[in-house]
Length: 187
Image (cartoon, one colour):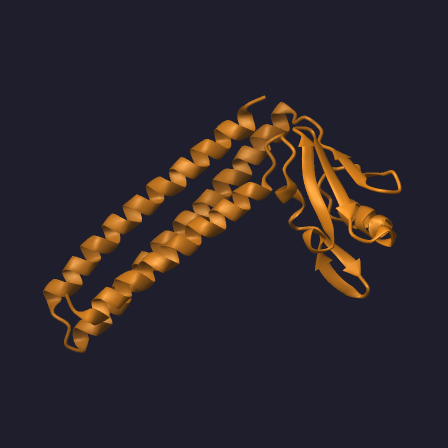
């Protein structure tokens, strides 16, 4: 097969990998009722005038399935961290004891679980769109290469390979979604 087509195949696979990676990161942010340090990934704190990720100015861990503990490296950051967690609108009520910030993760209601499953499905659909888009762009580029002299057989082979890759990635997305849904719905 033509080396341009091989390169195109790699680029298409890389784009699909990015869609899967994005989905994995987004699904980690959707809480499933169990405490997880990634729940605070989106929290930014005003650190001496610069909006900084919470994980860069503190230690975050989960001593038990219902609690997240945030221990800032500087004591004077306790109040700004507490305010940032409240401002992030995650539904948490942080408790500042002067040394650490403790967050008790409330159990999810049935309605909230269904809402989270819906969010997970939306993220999965976005990833599927990304995978299909990578396939479409790859095929369009392969057709341009055909006009520049790449054989029609190579382009047809690439199209078949791209479709096979797409099916594989869509199945991977479905599997990730299924696992997340089970995680969310488990009480």
